Image 1 (cartoon, rainbow, N blue to C red):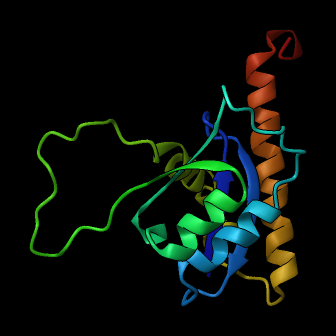
Image 2 (image 1 turned 180 degrees about the vertical axis):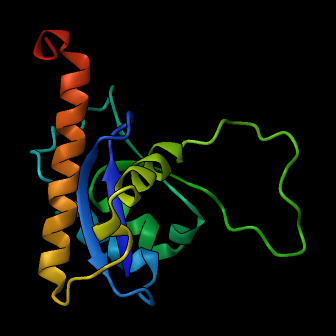
Length: 147
């Protein structure tokens, strides 16, 4: 089972899609961008909307999907196996909020190990877990609710 997540800069989930484990990432990109639960604001020329992706999306399909939806893509280039990673990267990594959100979702046993037979039930459980993540974040940011 593969989970594809779209998160905002702080790690809050905005969209979730599930698919079989053998589906390439580039095929899930369009479905993930369509699954956004909030209305996306129109991109402005002075304030572009960035989309950070890993090397699995470094294909013509991945680039076209980002550009067609008016995102400014930041896609990590694919590296040949014989070339080692750079010792001093020029920019800090941008993908850690997604990894952190995946880790938060994996803390629930029912999401870590898929027990549901139907994909719709599993996706509903992921959506419920994402809503709980947003609720926890809201409670943490509003101290008057904790009293």
